[in-house]
Image (cartoon, rainbow, N blue to C red; front, side, top):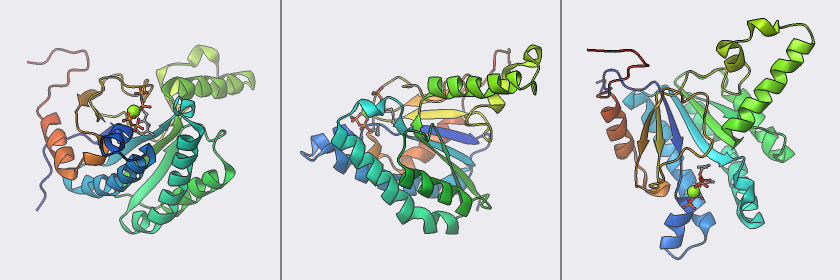
Amino acid sequence: MDSRPKGGPCHVAIIMDGNGRWATQRGRPRLFGHHVGARRVREIVRACPDIGVKYLTIFAFSTENWRRTQSEVAGLMSLFRRYITREAKALLAEGVRVRFIGDRIKLDDKLVRLMDELELLTSENTKVNLTIALNYGGRDEVARAVKRLTREVKAGHIDPEMVNEETLARHLDTCFLPDPDLVIRTSGEARISNFLLWQSAYAEYEFIDTLWPDFSKEIFAEIVGNYARRDRRFGAVTT
Ligand code: IPE
Ligand code: IPE
Ligand code: MG
C-alpha cells in the first residue's frame, strides 16, 4: 500500500548536525559521532521511496569545516572514502542515483576518484536521487557559477544582456536538481550555515533538537507529514 502523504515534499535537504555533541555526551571522541552519523544516512535514504521523497540532499562537509582540527578533518575524509566504498553496492541495488555537489579541487585524488566512480556506477538509477554536499558552500558555489558564466560571456557564447536567474541556476552545481521544498536541520541550531543559499529561496525550514546520530526514519516521516499541512504561497495570496 502507498502510505505517501498527499502534497509531500519532492526534494528534502538535510543539514546533518550534532555528531560531535552526541559523542561528547557519551565521553567518546568526536569522530565516533561522525561514524554513527554516517550509519544513519543509510536508514534515511532507504526510507525515501516509502515517504514519497524523490530527491534527498545531505550536507556532509562545508567549505568552512576545514577550520576544524587537522585530525578531525582527516578522520572525516577517511570516513567519506570508507562510506563510498562500503555503500556503493547497496546504493546501486536499491535504485539510488548518487551525485556530489561542492568544489572537488581541495579534495584528495583518491576520494574524488571514488566519487566519480559512484556517480557513474549509479547513473542509470531513478528511484531516489541522493545528492551529497562535500566541500560545499552556498557562496562558494555562486562564485564558481559566476566564474563559469563570465568565461562563456567572454568566449562570446552568452550575451550578457540575456543573463537572468535561469542562466545563473544552470551554472550552479545543482543544475540537475529541483529547488528543495523542505530543509531540515538537526541539533537545535537555527541557522543554515551556507547551505543551498540560492536554491532555498522558498524552501520551508524545520529545525529540530534531535542530534543527527539519533535521527530516525520515524522522525523523518513525521516531519515530511507535517510539511504537507503547510501553506506555501510563493509571494502570492491564497484563500
Ligand atoms: C555535523 O556534526 C557533521 C559535520 C559538520 C561534518 P558536527 O561535527 O558539526 O557536530 P557538533 O555540531 O559539533 O555537535
Ligand atoms: C553545518 O554544520 C555543516 C554540515 C552539517 C556539514 P556546522 O556544525 O559546520 O555548522 P556551524 O559551524 O554550527 O554553523
Ligand atoms: Mg555542528
